[in-house]
Image (tube, rainbow, N blue to C red; front, side, top):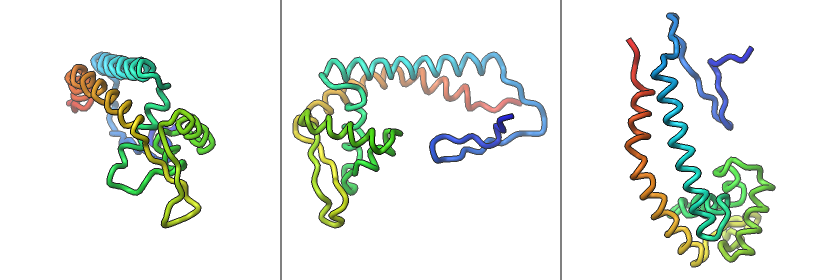
Length: 159
């Protein structure tokens, strides 16, 4: 039987605490979970649709965002991109190949460690990502109150 005391997500073990007294899931918990998951699915559906409308597959949009999010940090490598996107390294390498063929990323050898290949966005990628990010931020502002409300409901302590 699965022990809910140790819940593994990716490489991180999340420990849940169990109180000795019985804590049952209340009807409002189910409602909050369902509403929260629905809002997340709505946002993801919006995100996928927006990426396609911008002319790129959703996974490429996610990759561009992951690369751009490292501004001010060392450049992203294919391995780090794989970790950020929760995909296998060979899948990330193929994704980078598609991004490069589309003119969205460039690859260059790290000056510090010649074995490493670093990724950078092109000007075209910056334009596409900027437009997508503006739309995503507007969508999050619209559904944010619902997400916050449901998270607060889920986090409330029961007496």
